[in-house]
Image (cartoon, rainbow, N blue to C red):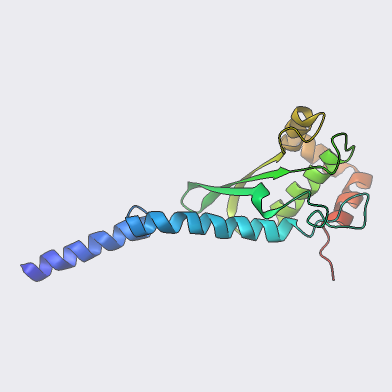
Length: 160
């Protein structure tokens, strides 16, 4: 009877640990989200600026701290990016947001919902741009434009 009780206790603790509900599982959760955020950052940091010969990382448009990942459901994540344009009146902020979206949609190896925002207070029309870059229909329409699509492709192409 004691062996059955011990086995049952072990099985229950294993189920709780695997589901993330035990203390060890709960402690593991933030580490997993941090790893996912770094994975996202590694994908977006090499995107090239549409005007300059630099990457978004080099220009500090994106940083590790601008990426947040939250678990929505098991193996389904919400990825939030908050990028900072180089100047408050940057005319290419929408294009940068589009590049972020396109590259992540192509490259993220896990199931996700994506939200991209301009960091609060860093752009004169951030509210309008945030709406544009998070509107699926507008994004799809933008990518149908061959000139815009070519610019995006040049920005998201991986460096040699």
